Picture 1 (tube, rainbow, N blue to C red):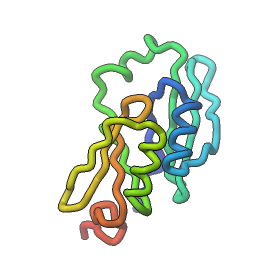
Picture 2: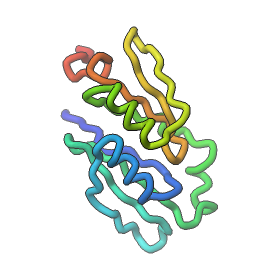
Picture 3: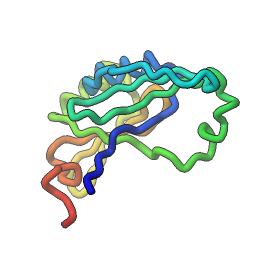
Length: 139
């Protein structure tokens, strides 16, 4: 059986601002504005990377209706991005005005952590961090 992760969904405060931010910093492209059924009062946009992995950004119109997703969820803890050059990405994040960027060592390699416009924790690393390397896998 072949399995691929196709998308991660996350609630956002402003779908356009968030999609634009991910486009500027990580080069993600807006591929579709999802048209949910009428009973779901929300906007949803998919952005994707060059490999076809997507993030679905959901902006609910009626936050109270989505409380079970908004509070006390066992959901996405953070999203990790592999980039070509961590230092270049850090410079881009600082240009965007992102505060609270922390660079930590994981398995002896630098990984940057910050929160996006909605408070979602983001990890960023480059090829030095082998856990994300496609050649480094369990057999």
